[in-house]
Length: 450
Image (tube, rainbow, N blue to C red; front, side, top):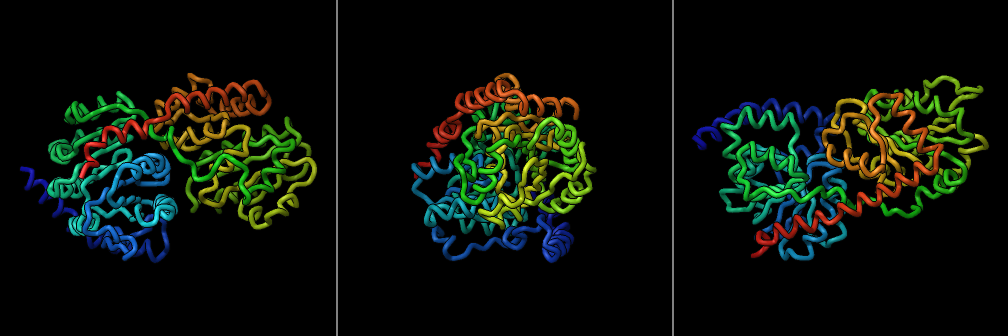
C-alpha cells in the first residue's frame, strides 16, 4: 500500500509539473517573490565553494522563513560546537535565505546556505545526493512526503524541533492520514513547543516515546542586530530619544495599517512630539501603504502629518535631523527589510501585526528583547502560549477591538509605571524560558555521533 500511495503522489506531481514550471517561470520573469530561488529549488545545484563537504555525511537544517531562521540561529551555534560534519541550512523564502547566507558567511564554509528543494522526486534526490545527510532537522513543522521517504531510505535520521501544528494543518493531516501515517512513521524525534502540541502529534499516530515538550526556541532568538545604538540609525536614535513618544507597528497586514493610522491620528493631540514607525509584513505592499499614509487628513490643530520613508532618512545619514523641526507628528514607513529589530529598539510601545486580522500573528517576543511593551490583537494562533504568558506576566496586552488597541497604546505612552512593569515582566519571561536550544541539542546528541 505504501508503494502504491507514493507512486500515486509522484504521478500527481508529474502531471502538475509542466503547469507549475510555466507558472513559476512567469513569476521569475516578473520578479515575484514567490519565485525566489526557483531554479535552485527545482534543479538543486551548489557552487563549488558550497559543496566542499560533498562526500562527507552532512547535517541538514531546514528553517522555512526569516522567523524560523532567527529562532534556529542560537541552536545552530550550539550544534557547531559539537558537530564535526558539514552543516547545510536551507530556507524557502528569499528573506529566510538571505538571513541564512549572511549567517553562514561567518563560519568559513562549515555552514552552507541553500534553497530548500521542491518535493519533486528528482529535485529531492539531487539535493540528498549532494548533502549526503546523516541527520535532517526541521525547525517548526514542514512535512514533505518524498523528502522524508528518501531520507528514510538513506537511513538518515529525521527530527522536527520547535514543533507545532495549526488547527488547519491538523485537520488536513487527519483527513489524509491513510497516506501521511507512512510519512510520519519515518520521523525519529519530535520536540514540541508545548505539551498541547505533543497531544496533537499523538492524535496523528506518532509514538509517544519520540515526542517531548521542550519549549519555544524563539526565546533564544539571536536578533539580526545587537541591542546597542547602531551607526546606520544613530541620527534617528538621537532625535527620538529626546522628547518623542514612539510607536512601532511591525509586520502589519492589509486592514491593520488603517487601524493603526486612525489610532495615531487620535493620539496626536495628546503629545507634543509623537512618531509612528509603520512596517508592513510584505515589501510588495510598501507603495500601497505609502499611499495610505499620504492620504491622511489634516491633523487636529492644522498642518499635515509629516510623512517619511526610512530609506530616505538612512540616505541622509548624519543629516537626518534635517527632517525633524520643532513640534512634530511624524509617520515613518519602514521600507527596508531587516530593520524591524532596531526599530523596535527605538520605540516606547510596539504593536505586532497579523493579529488584528485572522493571520495567526507574528513573533510577539521581538519587542520584549528590547524591553518594550507589546500589544497585539486576538488572532495569535501561531503564538498562543507566548501570548498567554505575556498577559500573565504583564509584559503586554491583548486588544480585541481597535478601541482597546488604542487605549493599550495610550496607556504605555502616557504612564511610565505601566511601561516599567511591562519591561520587567518581559525580561523575566524571556529569562525564565531561555535555554530551549540547549535542551533540544541534548535530545539530538545521539544522532550527532559518527
